[in-house]
Image (cartoon, rainbow, N blue to C red):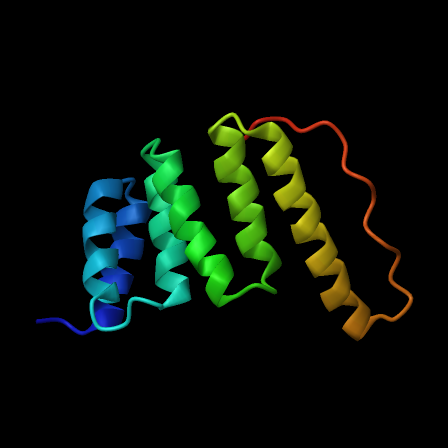
Length: 126
């Protein structure tokens, strides 16, 4: 049996080839010994979303948020998945959270960083 990282890397390769079902299978194998591996869960959610399984993707990325609640990228992904599910108000909330977290990170490097701009109308990401 291949080690988890090998499965994860195989999943990434398959994802790049747009073989999303096969990528999901590899991600699941990578998660067997460590079901809380946030990076793999995030990749799994993205593959689920690409297959149109937005409810699964949202549930999976919410688990990633539990594991990494300060990661703005995860909230950006959540926003995209919510957009694809037609939940625009929730998507805007997730996008605002991503902007706020990113700004807080920027403040650590640049204390004079301007606050994020208010959200505007959202174009649905496909």
